[in-house]
Amino acid sequence: MADVLPPDPRPPRRPGDGWVECRCGQRHWGRYGAAGLLLWRRSPQAPDGTGTPLAADATDPSRYAVVLQHRALWSHHGGTWGLPGGAVDPGETAVQGALREAQEEADLPPSGLRVRTSYLLDHGDWSYATVVAEAVAQVEPRVSDAESVGVAWVEGSAVTERQLLPAFADALPGLRALLGRRLVLVVDGANTMGSRPDGWWRDRAAASERLRDELAVRATDGLAAERLGLPGHRWYPDVVLVTEGRGRGPVGVAGADGVGGVAVVGAPGPGDDEIVAQAERHVTAGADVVVVTADRELRRRVEALGAATAGPGLVLR
Image 1: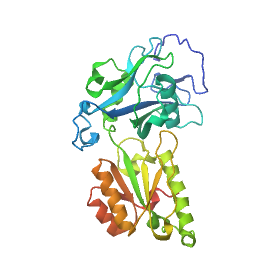
Image 2: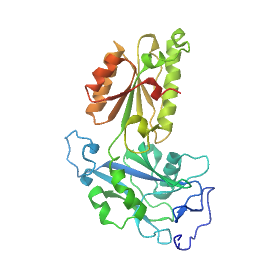
Image 3: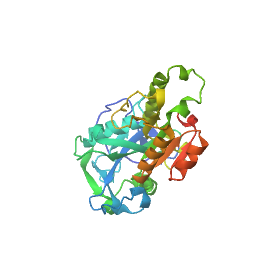
Image 4: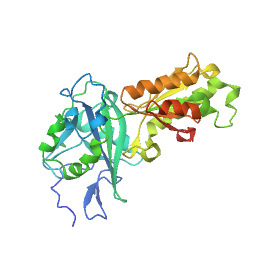
């Protein structure tokens, strides 16, 4: 039986607004699906100076704080706590929808956060994407529309003390495994360009620029979690493109607000040594690092540091 819903005082505001009668027997909001934002930051109460990433013990709720929304009483499951979010518009990605809704409902600016990954609940005829992001600036949520009674940073250890939206409570164990994690792709520029016979060697600097721009698309669109061996649905990496020799020259490009771009590092010496240095730096900082190269010896060196590896096909069309 479909849920009995309280009257909704809002007229439909956007093309995606509306209810879907789902095959699961329940009614869900969002004609084209829905998305919400799970924004996290390292808890001020967490121990400092350990150098241990949050993901090292994702089940320890004291290591992070998250933004929760206290839902308006007239809304579906009104009075419970969940995530700012709502219906996705046609032609809008889950990331775009989640960022827009979070700004509308909780005044969370995309420029102050970085999308890391997503978690998908898919019923076939309706889906809900939880977009997981890290606060990379001082961000303070506030109520900015009528759909919230309140919004606040909540310490991880206190999340389950609140009356949670049932779907959020069900997803919470899987979501906790994503908090505190970020993906860094370190791309071997020369090896990746050399994997396709498109005449790149005639103008290596221009080929590096084309690769940089292609990588920026990958960062914005994200990569499927199963291709990376990571949990969740999609990952939105920070990309480091290492260039060398005549391939040096292009500068980095920024991604869309809230989504990472591409940093270009010109190797002062052998490109492989710089790739190893970049991989070691980010592994030490606690990131999930994937080095993109087909070079077997380079793979061996970075895997010894704790990085994963993938062939150029991961990022090329």
